[in-house]
Length: 190
Image 1 (spheres, helix red, strand yellow):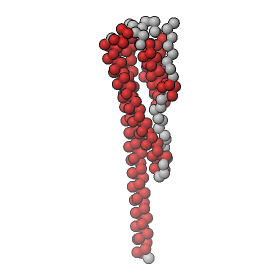
Image 2 (cartoon, one colour):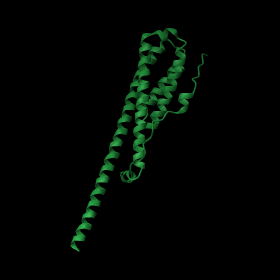
Image 3 (cartoon, one colour):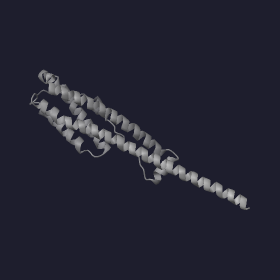
Image 4 (cartoon, helix red, strand yellow):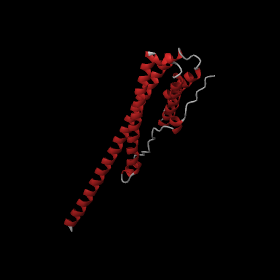
């Protein structure tokens, strides 16, 4: 009787140790993924800030050539302000779309100013901005990949049990609105 009690106790202890080990492992993987999400979000912010910092220089360079295109300058300035003040992933994504649209409108207008297109400051700023746009796209892709991994982990069984105990919820993707990519800029020379 004592021997079978020890075996049952040993099995129960082994199961408890395995459950604790599984819980710790699941908990740590969720925490690690959440930190990855936070890191990638920070990387997006760095690139968005870099772009926001380049915008005033670009605007000032363009202002001298395009005094009558004030609405374009104002839309870029407003979009930059919205991006700098955005707090959530969704707000940053919307502000990013707004700024991308404004910059696309600027690029259409710039075609009509050959002196501006040849200006070395403008060319350098445009190159910096293009490089930053590529880094933003890469950061956004990396962030969304980690968010997908995190969201999948907290929704799949058995880790969803631990995620629920930790009150973890889905993270938002950094999405681009389709209209900001497909919308043709309005050009008005009145």
